[in-house]
Amino acid sequence: MFNKETEYTLRGLVYIQLQNIKNRRPGTAEIAREIDAPPFYTAKILQRLVRQGFLASIKGKGGGFYFDGDKPDLPLITLIQATEGDRSFSGCGFGLKNCDANNPCPLHDKYAPIRDSMNKLGSGETIQSLAKKVYKQELKKLKNAK
Amino acid sequence: MFNKETEYTLRGLVYIQLQNIKNRRPGTAEIAREIDAPPFYTAKILQRLVRQGFLASIKGKGGGFYFDGDKPDLPLITLIQATEGDRSFSGCGFGLKNCDANNPCPLHDKYAPIRDSMNKLGSGETIQSLAKKVYKQELKKLKNAK
DNA sequence: TTAATAAAAGACAAAAAGATCCTTTAGTGT
DNA sequence: ACACTAAAGGATCTTTTTGTCTTTTATTAA
Ligand code: FES
Ligand code: FES
Image (cartoon, rainbow over all chains, first blue to last red; front, side, top):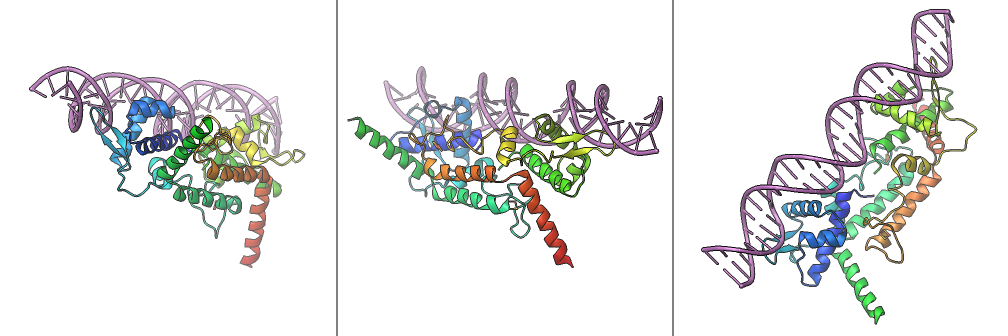
């Protein structure tokens, strides 16, 4: 579905936010290991995200990555558009220059609603909402293990 | 959404089928021009489709591409999986090795239904059904022009 | 103030996708 | 039979994506 960079981005940021909930600030090596991504590539991606203002970081001993708690939650669509463009959220499924309901391609009737759902998912979910889900899932597992 | 090769494939085959309806067998140059795709690349793609048995061709003067009318209609999912794999139809939106409803990623609940819709689209629509839509649309336009 | 640590920056490399071109082969129509 | 046409095959090239590595800069803890 998404390209590699986007997948690493999503998994990485959700992992960071999850650790932030636990009052930790993970570094590149730990993040890459935990989300099963190439370490150097992960570092480069996180670097860019910091430059773009989506993420904050601290250098040196005890440093790592974290989200500024004062900022609003980060919608997936914002993140993904910044990473790979909006190929998943707009554009014609048939590859026409642009999707025009008044001059639709033969896929339009069936495809446009699916694309709308993707948009709803992208604006409805945020890195924070996903991390919360994982956190709750972890708690549930711990309870069941007792 | 889909990659370039898949888009050219869809547009190309729908164009061929549309011309077949009109008892014509278009060649690579015409097809590429009409679907707005790179001529040589289009030729290479059509070649592969013939090799894979999705399409038939005739060489030499008056030659071109056509669909064997005896064969069943070609579902988009079959075609797309043969072209770019099934990244659009299966797999986890979060990039996990595989999508497992019993151990879901935080995107699963929202993403899996969208993926299911894509599957329904892919198996429900065929090159022939799309070409028929375009054909009907053309007829309607001609009538309106009167 | 120094040694250790960890992110930032950017050069470099490999692989995949996208695209072009040339030569060969098969078939058509005259 | 012959000239022409159009697909088949394959080599080559470019761009984008993915990934690695080295050097620099900032920070912290001792
Ligand atoms: S025109 Fe193709 S999806 Fe809308
Ligand atoms: S587990 Fe990720 S989409 Fe199903």
